[in-house]
Length: 582
Image (tube, rainbow, N blue to C red):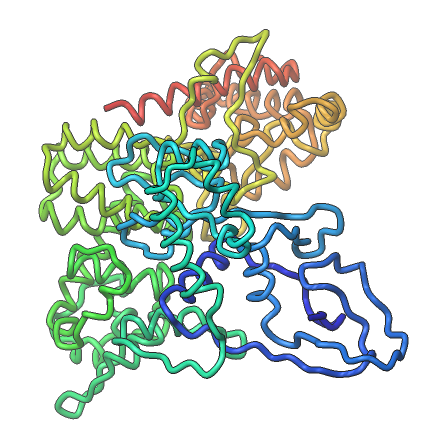
């Protein structure tokens, strides 16, 4: 098959490939593919090929099979089952090859995670002895895990590679028989399955999974779309509408227990959701069911939503307020902390009253989870496990168990010296990176005040006081350009963008008072302004709120970048240790 030149390149990520495999395995519809058998008339390229490697028509008298729709699925299957390398997106140099394994004993909450990529950690219910399969030979995998993991590529060429596989098993016949049966299951359910003339069967839960994975006119049908239709009701002449219900939950003032009185009496037109609709649904489900499986949302009934309208409103606003008061998370930032919101939703219901002990526990939990990246990958499973901890153990014991599940440590930073410095791997140039988001919030949590005005910059508000992430040694300053040139060929090429060179100040100060000036110029100017008003101590408090000590101010006056970055990194590390200490 050939792809017409007008087809976009392959862009699916690993999770989309995983979902396709899982859909096939469960006999879900994956829609059809569309082919056209025509002449040598269209410029074309190979499936998974370089987008610049175009075959030009020569008007030969031959039939060409063109793949008009289904390229992403076809390429994904080729990647999963063969050793053919694929060019991704517009990359014309780097080819990709992946290995996927079927974890035959996976019993977690997300069924598609039974298909594990070779570079991912192996699922373990108790989080013990996690491994990455690509770090082991096939022989080592068989030796350690027997027939647990089935390599999808074995299914494609099984007839030819059986002797090799048997040899890798040290000719263990019992093991070979078990593995062979599982390979045959993959072949039957996935590899040899037809993709046309499929009748979808099953309950709503199964059908929904299919709907969520099919794009209709490039618009994905979501859980929220399904639930809007599922919960719509006419009750005594009034209509229940899920979209209006979510607006009531986001209403910033008190509401009445009666849903329909709220609809009739509240001005909801200007109410905006604090998080997206699907996340709101998940949080409602957690508060109502104390469950973390997405499909449980489908069990929510219109009647119980109406009955719990005020309770859900009050608990949700408490959750938003808790994040704002304890962690400086503004409403505009809530989307960055969805996994934490899921657990906190359950905690707010579980504890009912959040006393001082619970507050301290939740603060430690939050910072450990965020700064030490406790929620990578299958987040719902980890959230569910955290909830199980607080149900089954004391808060002290729960904390100890949670500490064992960190995926990021700072050991190297604790060994840092001036002669051999280490830096927090968080960079302004990659602002969406989890560790950068975490560190930025940590900067805010100390009540970061503007260098000049002393005001706390915020995400929303007038432009003059809006929060901006400022390079303390500005990129376009003379010293900034010198730093860039100094490190351009080193392993620390992006050091000027490190979080230790970032402060949270107002747009007005950043644009009108600092601009592209060296720290030695603007810091002295700011310090003199406070000194003239006999408020030097206040200036030091302002700088301390940004994790900048008196000694660091002196380094800024000398434009000593290395000295400043080293000392500020050490101070940030002390804050991490303090926040995460249990």
